[in-house]
Length: 169
Length: 450
Image (tube, rainbow over the protein chains, first blue to last red):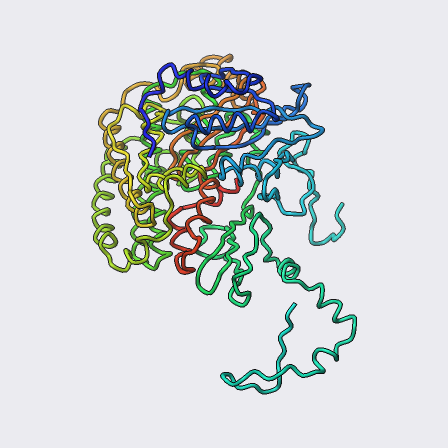
């Protein structure tokens, strides 16, 4: 059982440096006190494996943010929240993904718990997770068209069908 | 495909008769063609029971023994609308796939159309057994982006309410856990004591559930008159009731028989699958965000992290009972040390001017009106805030583009991640233990589907 300390890890950048050593393209930023690393999709697996070996045992959350109309270089950003219980710290990975070919490698091989989260991200944003064993819709019906959490998916765009009028307007 | 045949009369136990010739040769070509394509897989697909994932069919299992059963979505023991695709071999569960989405209402999408102040009404409906935790998590994330200071009294009120909410949530979990296994008295007891807390919530916030009381900037109102007596009564009566629960269940041989060694999950599996909360602590890990990454001033209070050792249903029940005691300890300390002062921040960007000022000043009235119609602007940024909800790590990922509504609001729902534990817990267990496993996980479908 890994132990954790009650205080945030001292200095701690040793850990981060050793993780980032193998991935020189990764860019470290701090966002309101959180440790955030920007990494390209091609380097993601290498970085996550390093993080996993470096003590980040848990993948807490995988989600996507859509920056339609805000960012021009890439529209989506896959957000991966890692947690280390033994070092008591968090690490957030941001993976920029373009609109044309939204694909990132799947983390199911490293963190099996990523399965449901990646399915949700796929369902809601249409991001494909390459190598995922079962990339199907999870919250929306199987025959749903579109990805509802994209910013250009309008609220209320689902046609409403009333009993009196069988034709969908 | 092996074709089984029937004859008119065949007495069981005697030698099976040869299939009659006409049965094989007599069918016309078209029908045979159909049969040839009627593979097991396709048949299952048509029945809606085909499970599509990475699993490779093990040919050694006799087909007659294997059966896929859909449990739910309307099953009373699935705590809402959870469907489980269960593959049975005789009476043994070989494989489980949770199928969710029946309660999906697009709350994360809705959040993008609500102002930051209105967002509380949205998130509070996610985990309807722990609405105050959802509000707290969301508010903390907004406050992190805003960078506002919360007065000590507001923080203490938040701790008081969320810990009471944890007690009421664990009471429901224990009650429904009892009901699912057949201890119906436990269900009555649990809901009876929960009512005490909900009455206090009604008195404080105006609503029994979905309070929207904890808001960015503080809380909506001060505690009502006589709150100390109410909280004192809650502590006394629930502590007494806990004794009843212990008499009822702790050494109950039927209860122990149904829960000991059932639904075991190890600490390593919990970490790999992202499972947090009482399920993780029942394996022996003393991971509690209230201790390790404290929020809202909870580090000032003295309490212990309750852990189990075996990671089975019984340990999870023990952890929840222990956490009720610890939460009541925190509540008692908050009650005695409640600081005086304001219950919301004095930052006029976030909180409206006091009532007295509105009576006197036109500008204050406009200010009040603007905050409640237009909302306040939150600086550009993204943040993740996690708190220890009753079911595990409850997180809020918030992105602001500088306007009055979030660019993206994502809730890391503990029930959602914890569902990944079900296939592990239930693999190779008896079908009768299914409901015990689900109940011990305490999933809230509103939280799972959002």
